[in-house]
Length: 390
Image 1 (cartoon, helix red, strand yellow):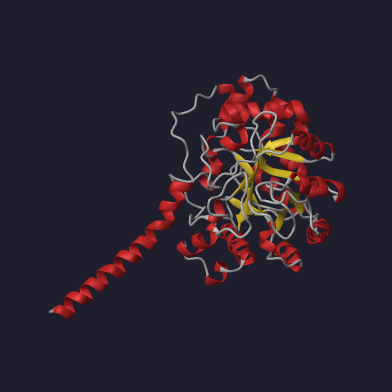
Image 2 (cartoon, one colour; image 1 turned 120 degrees about the vertical axis):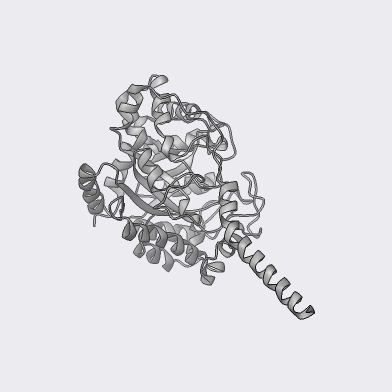
């Protein structure tokens, strides 16, 4: 009898642990990617009509980090294909997160701090090779996006070149709900310190690479690291390799010295995929307005984020006001959207509600042509000019 009780107890514990492992990824996702509670947004008929005609583009979403099937609609998190369609999003850059410190902050993170993504990979039952390789983590997330095209070709198309982008635009004429996706890195920690991995990532559909995340790394200093350093020699070599392959360079999270160094050697325009303007929202997350001006003067784009550290609030109104500020600073041709959806932020809306930004921009007096540019046409034009041709 005692043996039977022991076996039953062990079975109960196994079932309990298995159940916890099944439920924990969803619990983490829901707790780390909430949306602030809000009443339905008031949207004018004029704003809705305009929004329905826009090409909407977003430079940054970390949705592939989580155990959601992006083909399906969820009532948690910030983005999936049905909600992107509801928000009339045409172009979405999916970024791959590979390393993030415990105790993450915008002021100072030690390079050797414990890494949250290792624990997340284990809890979400990612392949064992992702537990120790940052390159494999990037590949695993990218493969989710590539697989999405295979499973849902009527609604999603992966874009890797100017040629693909042209095909996508033709397809969208007949299917206005089709979403075009691109793949990028959240920091070049994904290189695992190996220059050859730039080309390996390119060959596996990566078309944008950011240089740093919350840690300093082999390429140089993070805006939230400890050194404030500029590009290292390895960083310069990585930039050369990215430019050789026509990979878009994203300086989100890079130290100001890295941004200056990249501007001095780059022969292509830069992107800051998700940020705010320091003159509108003074925050350690935002680099100086003077550097924003330099990026714009070289043809770059600034993606305005949707969370408090970027725009000092998380409402559609605050995002719209930050956009207006940016237009005044660098011109409407250089401002875009960079949500940081599913990036462990708390926005005041999800991607299905982007019409609320269009409404607020109209309310603030921005002209319709400028709205078209910042909501997505600038992103489209940038991709048409800077993606590989084929």
